[in-house]
Image 1 (cartoon, rainbow, N blue to C red):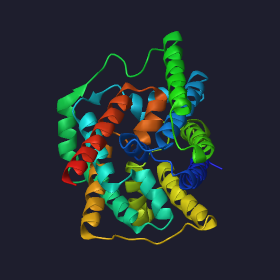
Image 2: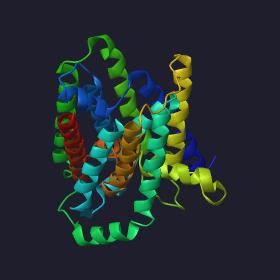
Image 3: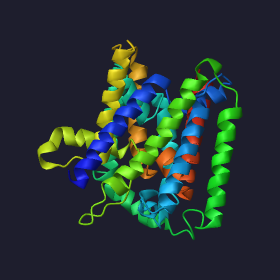
Image 4: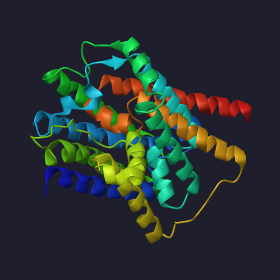
Length: 338
């Protein structure tokens, strides 16, 4: 089997597992934020912290053992836009609030019969491509060129300093995950699921940077992300005869299928739709903002939040803080209008 085929099959398996685990545990960063702001018992934020701790440790290990050239990943590129990165993060966060979840969560919900999520995903994928290669691409490139900077470093220095930072981050995340109050009845389930999702992030790096390494076609390693890959999947569905499958596409397909199979087994597959016109408007607006914001911010809560932060990237930290600010802005405005 060719390296490309191995990568695609690995992506499908990773997606199936991610979809199944997320359907069982309800893994969702936004749900965790919302519960935290409302002072409600929930394990979602703690689960995300645990998944990130596992991802950071695993990514560090495959980096120092030179299994995967993590330094070549998108999240550690030498130049970043001081304008588009935080702007995109805030747009994504606000859109996530409108849509009541990120792209990954929408895929899982679609797999268990939520047709509202189909609208979110279509709007997300189309708007992402409008900004990446479509009508708004020239504007994005223009603003990017105007605001490009070259930081002295994109991640902590190699050697003991990097090891110290990695260890400190992992310990802090683990302390938060296991000492914060949450929902005791589902804590073991949620923490086990989070651990596996962290492992899947590391598996993504290995699938693209080691298992699928091809000396004749060198591609930067990547892991889980759900903005551009959703757009790629929609494009492949329409133009497959002229396109090649990508790792992200097989992950997206796997997540939907994994959630679908698991929801059937658990007898939780229920077809649901919009209850009102305002609800549909929010789904459309949320999908569009997440698509645009995700491209500008170079990722989503999974892409930047787990895959990006697993590399200890400073730019990923900026994106995630902006996403949280955007989500908080939506929550604040929503409370005021109700």
